[in-house]
Length: 521
Image (cartoon, rainbow, N blue to C red; front, top):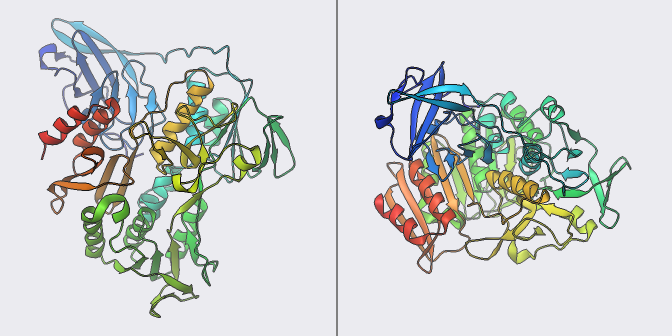
């Protein structure tokens, strides 16, 4: 997705002088019509593919962190030795090549074979993943990548299975991405790695004592280990007209298809909710030429997540594209042709999109008797640092998992696509005894027209916000602090800084983090 990066730098088949290679930084080159990256660390040289397997970002613009190379756009993490996609949102590896050193130059060598995965004597007899979203898809792939050879069943509610959910409200909804991009993997891929992908016959109950699942058809399925990646479901406001056929939430591919179908002949749309999903949908519908109004209870869109400064910036950006905002407002009813607000005013609309939040899908966990988190912690399934639930055979990952935040110690439930994938990968490793705490730094991105916002860390509360740079010029960092400590940083136009902040947060090095931020005001 996103295409091959533009070829740049020297031709590595002709060699590059060793003294031209920077220490510990990705160096862009090419060979045989493909972009590659050279990384030199002391006497060690690595040559890997130069294009991120997620959206095609140039990895030469990324960051080397330890033995990994990070993508500048969406922070995918690749192993420099094996090419493995160690952290989402990328799931496919990058190529690794041998390096030939001759006459003071480095030349690209043959492509390395994929490393042989190790076997796991203590692995479960079988693994069932309930929920074919990003967490479930990443878990199934990680199990095979790590050498698990037992049966894996991936169960989803609807075809085609795992999809690129962020794209549903972004390029796909806007009409600039084809549907072929949406599936994370197709059925042939799962068959090729011996994963049984099943959609259309959902799980309706779990017998944890017997370690069996019951499906809607009445079929029973046993498991040795179970991953609950059931995600969250979109909320519909309990108002008259909320179930009319032109009123849609946006959570699944079917939702996006229905909205696109209506947008083909609608002139006016109302988006209820000034959330990320709501505003991204608004931008996409404007790209299709619809008149768009956004109704939200907030005084400033996204202020509860990003703060008023960045929220104002996003609002002005949308207004410059023709979106009308009705803030501090709530809908009272929806009719076939309008949305009526609490103040009695009416907004004409042939299409209504509800983006008012989601709730974790915990019914199956309840049927299994596992411990749930309290509402104050965002609900969901309570898991430990390895994403294991109160039942030793059941893990949870993605939007439904409530886990300890390694930076603050708070219980958190985070609804980010990349987080879900990384949790799925971590849960898979834990099932194989390769445990250790899940301690990845949360990351998400949000696209609004030609502006992308990157956010690393997690700050549900803060007592100070610093804006560094110039938001109007689309070159800024927004720092969220509590008691003086940095909890999260959002960036606009500063991809390199976002990666450096992530690395410092991973290390838990507050002094290094402050130096990173101070180096670029």
